[in-house]
Length: 118
Image (tube, rainbow, N blue to C red; front, side, top):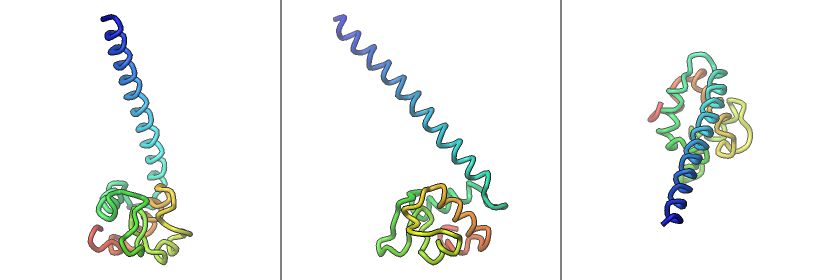
């Protein structure tokens, strides 16, 4: 019986530590996200970009449309991506860069680049 109690205690300890690790990771990600969004162009909120990204790609920065034309969290095409200073594949860019470039685009054109989700 003591072995069972020790195993259960060990499992509880692991569970507690895993929760702490996940909480610390979440806090770090949120802190980094706040830093990125603090530098967004005026008038563009994190909530606006979150809504567009969720609608366009389910919030997945690696998403690619079925025909490959639209890429990343905000479903940029290459021309639009390049128009806001992006280079390469939008879906391969870090999420923070996609957020920043979407904010630039929103600051320039409002929600019109995202006619369904904007």
